[in-house]
Image (cartoon, rainbow, N blue to C red):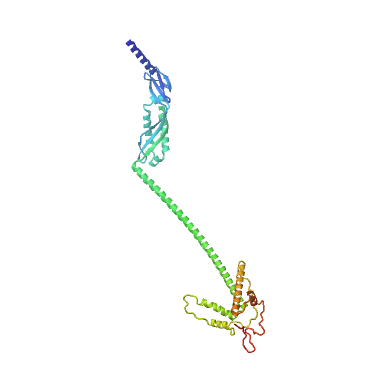
Length: 396
């Protein structure tokens, strides 16, 4: 019985091995190369495949996907005898598994060597500067040569890229210095141009500012001169009108000796004003005025003897601008009121014991509105009597 069990086990193992040799599963994007007694028989596609066991053998399993291979840096001499290290990346795809298996022993190594030799041929005709700036040209040349050489191997080269071009360290240092000097040169040029433009703009701005300042100063001086001229003209006209008004008012009022004496007495405190005025001289006119204040018999020089009636004002015409006439009328009214007050005060000083007349009546009498005739028995002031004396208003 044990022998039977052993035979059954051996038969089962043989069946399993037979099935394993008969059924072959090929993955997607793969191709299996089948050989029968060492000779190519067929190519298995992806999926489940049946082969003759112990007769057919899957020799190679070829990857049909696009592959990427990076080759280590290779020393390449340029046209100007400089050694540079260039590493490349190759993108290729197997299009014919049979050719890739039987036409070349190791297609990856073959592509690497072909890439290195082709790269030396292309870069050997360029100098360092052209090599560093002609990557696209080198890639196109490599791709064309590799695609043509690998076509019979059942391989298509899709793309070739230069991953890096490394010049010698001394050349790198020189290039960095040259690049640094070139950048410093451009920076200096740009800085100089910027300073020049800034200086030009600053000068133009200063010029325009000076012109505008000068024009403004000129206009200001012209306006200030015109304003000063107008102010001086108006001031002179105002002073002239004031002097004329006061002069005419004094002459219309016909002041007597008592009024002048009172005015002299009012001026005496003003003469003594000031901290430095310790000694001051009394004018002789004040003495005469005091004499006239005590007695109205004597005359003060300069007072007219006869009244001669009210003097008529001479209209000199309005020399003021239209805008100032209202202000002038107001000042004239204030001046007339001041004159009325002065006449009333003078009459009160001349007749201390009498009754003062109203300001309107005194003003009318001063300007000739009412002719005052002295009494018949009292001689007029300034006229001589029969005995040769001068008539004057008696004082109390």
